[in-house]
Length: 282
Image 1 (tube, rainbow, N blue to C red):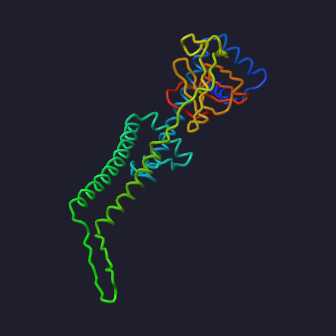
Image 2 (image 1 turned 180 degrees about the vertical axis):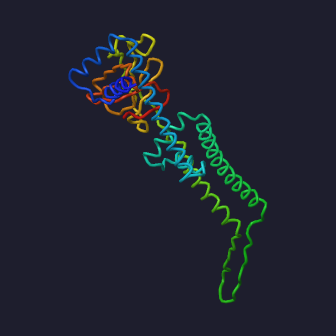
Image 3 (image 1 turned 45 degrees about the vertical axis):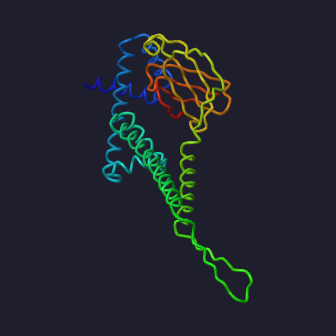
């Protein structure tokens, strides 16, 4: 029993980066030479990640129960980009792990867009009805006031309240149109700045790369202000969103690490993994 505890502590020390010198060299040699040992280390890492993930989920549930019992308010704050960095991370983890929560966000987003469209349609309908009523009315009455001292009559015109209502409706419609254009008119577009084909360096060759023998990936550097500093990685294609030119790109794979890929961009290092949606580099 004591021996098992020491063995586990030995693996923990490696994963936490506490081994050095001869101990680290001996551990890495065992990873290369002993397949069973490497698999055991990998399983230990997965167990640690699972425990950490459950901790995040418990924090999110506790937050929802204590601070935002109304899920609609939480989603509204997320869609309005009003969450703190810590809360944003918790919500994004929930979106990734909870399909029902993800569907609720999409449904609420569609509902908000529908409300905006209905609002604009209602204002347009009011304006059209106002114009129709104006056509049916007779010309506003004109009263002449004659005075003996004056040779010419003066005309006094009275405008109905409907005229002012029509003008107010036009102003409301213009404001609504500006609001809609702000939301839907400035959609950012992707511009591919450069593409590369790079070889993936396998840190632990005995464990294989990505379980399918991949050795090269296509890299696309894409300009998109809204997604600056994000990436996507799937189907042997790595997309990096950056407005700056990247001159040096390297990718390493380590089966004992989680995430398993280390991306190096002009000297900066980022741990990444397969993902089909834009994910922030950190």
